[in-house]
Picture 1 (cartoon, rainbow, N blue to C red):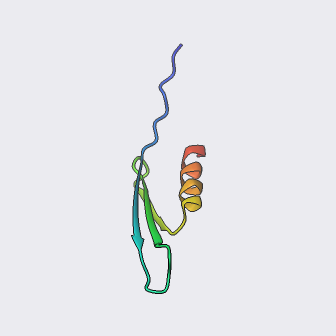
Picture 2: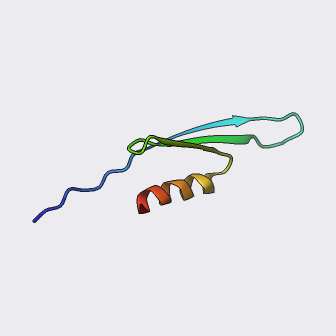
Amino acid sequence: MSSQPQVASFVVRCAGFSDAGQQSPIWRITVSHVQGEEEITVTCFEEVCKFMKEKLSG
């Protein structure tokens, strides 16, 4: 018996904004879960990974 593979798709958009007093950009990262039609916006990649892990686990 073969089972269907579970598919999860994500779209990640990154935009860096520079402030006059900052050396490195501030990131605005939007990640969308395609199948669940959910989207979040965060400022660090760790939050992106956390969101994706939650969607893959549930």
